[in-house]
Image (tube, rainbow, N blue to C red; front, side, top):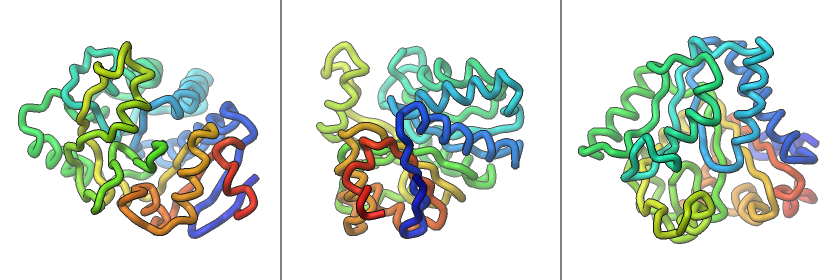
Length: 252
């Protein structure tokens, strides 16, 4: 099912697998149309299926990543790249080790940066100098965060260090041996950086995301629900499974 609302194209898939395939097709189409695309990439549980589909497409010679540059949304802080819970490790394991992207074209915030302000400034500067992000992939937290832009009084603009909400720490603890091991801070692209992307694809699956999807689409635009700012972006594709679309089915 496809619908349009507030400049967003909404696709409701029957299953997580269908959602993942649709997302992968959009990313692959972007790369095929513009081989030197700048991709903004997300981590977490939701995009894993999309990355698996992209690997299959690469193995079947349906897409070539040799000229692509990537910029990841965020990274825990502090964390070593060798830590199997780092987003560097996640991206290598789920995508980069299995496709032909150049190591020089992979960009992920440094979770061990000694000068955080310098790291954030240089990250944004590198995105700008690359021509900006052509297609940004996003997930969404149950509290409405995108990247690690947590609910706040204002929208953070550029890449920055952020203190993670307790809700986010609890949600991410499933990836760690215990909640005490979850880093309490992260480096994240800011809302201005994300909103400057030419196109955005946001993925959400599962009933736990249904309420926040409703707030994101039909609530007021507020930093208390960071993803609500996407209502102002001219080119957003929202791909949901049926469970995540539960509260919006009758509104779209």
